[in-house]
Length: 86
Image (tube, rainbow, N blue to C red; front, top):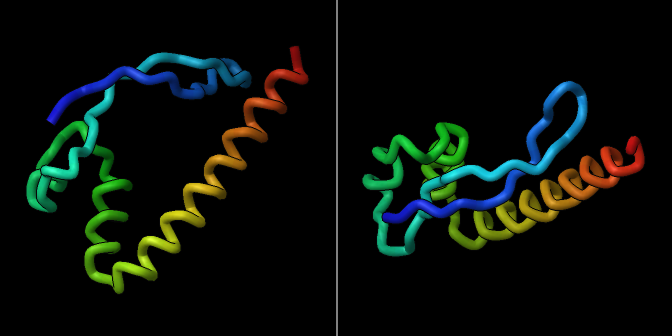
């Protein structure tokens, strides 16, 4: 397991700003037990992973792709909206 820094969008005083955060990278070598025990991984993500493992893997993968697309679009909207306010 390793940590990596990456930029995140943070809301401060009503505006979004880019910030850097150190987060745990989930390795393909980590098993489900290690992921669920890792304090650096959010409860939301742990719950999503645990739930996905209980489903058909193809369905879970398709839903994960849809979620990624939706969150990417939401992120883009937030960044663009914040930049137009400048």
